[in-house]
Length: 316
Image: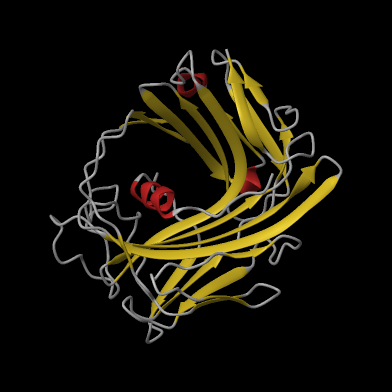
């Protein structure tokens, strides 16, 4: 099983539904001037999650806080290292996309916080959106810092074919990757982010990627190899009428985190399907001009059985 790059819809959703943590990221405009951090990450309303105005490229407030952000850029890189049967998987993928929406529909999801976990419960089917996405070009985007040069060039439709190396891990945890855009409809910019460590999950026990849990008990995850970035556990469950997503995060250097039973209790009792994943992540968002730019650097290592720490979730 190979892991595919992030899609724009997921990237936009994660950028909007953030828990406020920052990873190391430096943004620069085409002239090389640093972008102000601005505190917590901005959401789709133009305010950060503390309710304070988010910062624009010059470090000042967004011009119109009543106007939702409708332009997004996502820049993602992923490395994977684990076993699939007798085969060792080592891979790297990079993708970028820039999109402008005609409108942003308000969220219909309910959000609950519990410890280091955020739980979203969303009704299904998803209400129809009036948004009409238009892809935008930022010219050729190069990524420096990896062991091999990476370049992504947009097609005539302004969409960027993903870069993929199915045989190598092209950067290690702690490496600084710099995304540099030459500029086109989206202006020139640079974004630098620190790659997370590749983690090895040591508990709970998994079998061929399958995880089984008891919703009435806390669930502790332990791992080795943590130095930079965050460790993230994602539990997802679907029914005919709703989707439930649990994201729990902790500093990778801690070596463990616990998903509380109060969060697990929100998983529906009779799902039509459920899945889980464990990864390390470096995620940050900045406003550059009118674009909400998000970087997603992730690493998928092995579970306790050596297979990918991602797969089917079973619970009772």
